[in-house]
Every structure is written in structure tokens, then in C-alpha cells.
Amino acid sequence: NVQSGKREKVQVLIDGTDSAAAGVINKYLVQISSDLSVRLMNRSFTPPVSFVSRYLFNPELNSKWFSVPGIAVVIMAILCTLLTSLTVAREWEKGSMELLLSTPVKPMEIIIGKLLPYAFLSLCSVLIVYVLARLWFDVPFRGSHIIFILSCLIFLVGYLAIGLVISVVLRKQLTAMQAAMIVGLLPTNLLSGFIFSVENMPLGFQWFASVFPARWFMSITRDQFLKGSNIFQLATPIIAMSIISVILVSVAVVKFKGDLD
Image (cartoon, rainbow, N blue to C red):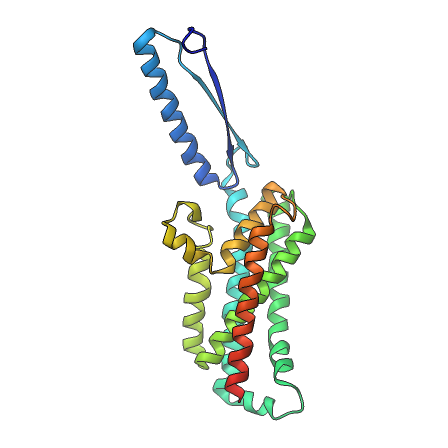
């Protein structure tokens, strides 16, 4: 059509889940279209190419739709890692952990009792973010609530295990808090895709980001809010997050039992 002098229309569909990346992609495509149209006009006065872009899942590239679901991931990571590490470390620091272990209660029952309140608190925070996202910020939820809750529980277990490992290794509240901020907060903000797109990072950073459950849970959360993919389409992030969480729990249990022995 271009060679015959007719106007050519090009439609490009861009995934709008990541509003920042979608905007950059559209700018590049517009520039390519403009350069092509100029070259065609200079050569044969061919009418320029008509370029039309559409954003899927987030037509207006609303930044709130992109950032608000990610806040749930950040809050859960902070609560699970920071509060868990501080609570258990306080028991070690005060010497009350040995007193608790001398009771008929099993060690793992003590730890579960310590972690359950923060697990419940983290789930409540996710519920609050969900309600605010839907009612206050008008963020749609197109996915399955069952998949979302299941993913929350898997993510929750992994970060509770991280907090437990930190508390067992350090046993001091101050150092445990500092380690929790470094291990829990920084990777969640910088390597999960909350601020920077993981796909745009160097390959080494992408591999490193894949070690953290937040990288996968961030993808699942935004997907469930904006895309609504089914369980089969989310198999890769769910399986990856599950494997990482199982490894973290295993490390936490082995380390805790080893210190008791």
C-alpha cells in the first residue's frame, strides 16, 4: 500500500500494566513512525504512515493503577520481615526465649505463636490496601480472589521465614532491625518492579531479583488487579515464589533447631 501511494495504518497494542514502560515504548514507536513517514515523503511524496497505539489493561496509563497494587507487596514485606525479626530477637536479647523453651511447649509451637499475629496483621494490611484501591482509587480487580489470597499466603510464609532467620542469626533488636530493612525493604522497593521495571535491568540484576519472592508477588498482584490471568498463565511466578518460600522456611527451621541444639 505504501509503494502504491496509499496511506498505511499501523495499530500497536501495548501492555499498559506497567504504565511507565508503556509510555516509553509508545514514544519510541511514535518516533520510528515519524522517521519512516519523513523518509517516505522525501522519496516519493507518499502519504505518511498513520500510527495508532492502544494501551491494554490500562488505557489511560493511570499511574495509580500501576503503583497502588504494588503498595500491598511493600507493606507485607515490611511487616513480615521487620516486625518478626524484632519480636523474636527481643526474646533472645532478654533471655526469655530460653525460659519459653524450658516449658512443655514445643519450640516450633513457640515460633508459630510468635509469627501468627504478624501474619494476621499483614493480611489485614493487604485487605485495607485492596479496599482503598477499589473504592478510593478506582483500581479494577479483574482476576481471581482465590489466586490472589493463595499468592499472599505463599509470599507471607517466605518473608516470615526471612524475619525468623534474621532474628536467630543476630539476636539483637538493633542489628535485626537494620538487617531487616536491608534484606526486606530495599529489595522489595528496588528489585521487585515496584519502582524500576525488572525487564529493563541488566541481566545480572534480573537474576538477582528473581531470588526474592517480592519480584514474583509484585507481578502476580498487578496481573490480578489489571489483567486477570488464570492460574495456568501465572504458573511460572507462583511456582518460583513457592520454591523460594520453601527454601527460606527450610533454612529458618534448620537454623533455629541448630541454635537450640
